[in-house]
Image 1: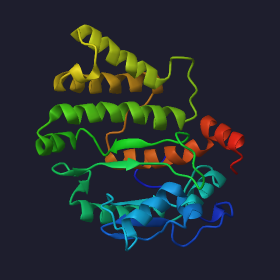
Image 2: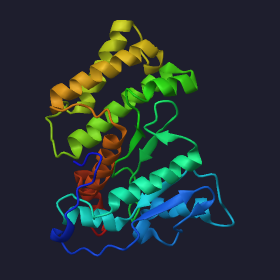
Image 3: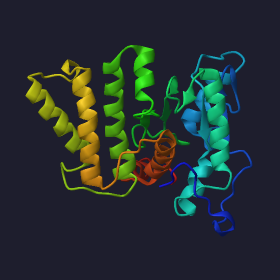
Image 4: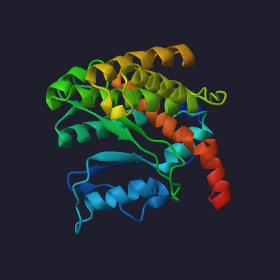
Length: 266
């Protein structure tokens, strides 16, 4: 799985047709794409572009960018690697998002958090993966607490990221198939259940900021124990891990089965 730089296979890559433009930005009343580009941007990407950039709409869509379906095709044709130049394209578009949002990804004082979402040419609801709160690290948590004045919100977001990332990126995308009820998400849920029992509460919302902060520590220890590696504490590692996991979910069991049942080309 790539870290802060994307692995490129250069001249040894399989011959997959890639357009010169592989990232499409949207936000600030503008968009590179439009609704008719579902084959290239997927349904979600095309619709976001339409809402953000159509002159009759220009809705206040949060800024972002879409990696094209061609990148996913290349990814699977080239041993889960990326075409040359994608790292720079992603970083360039990330700077545009930062400019519009007025925040910086990975900044200790005013951090930008992002979501990495999936999309396809044909609608496949719930079949592919999404990772939220990407960019929350031990380095950005204090700044977000200061900005929001809500430590409970921040620590709850962090434990959700650990749970989602370890499940989607570190387990599923890595091809790990645990025994029934032994998946990392189930194991983390049991830790949370045990804490609620210990605290004498029934709902997640009854846990306070200190409880959730402790959960984050317990979650990361369990991730290391079960999956054999640390939960990433670097914002760019989280981003590239999430991008790879979304592409990997195209060939996940749920997605493959759904396409077969619905007659969607794979």
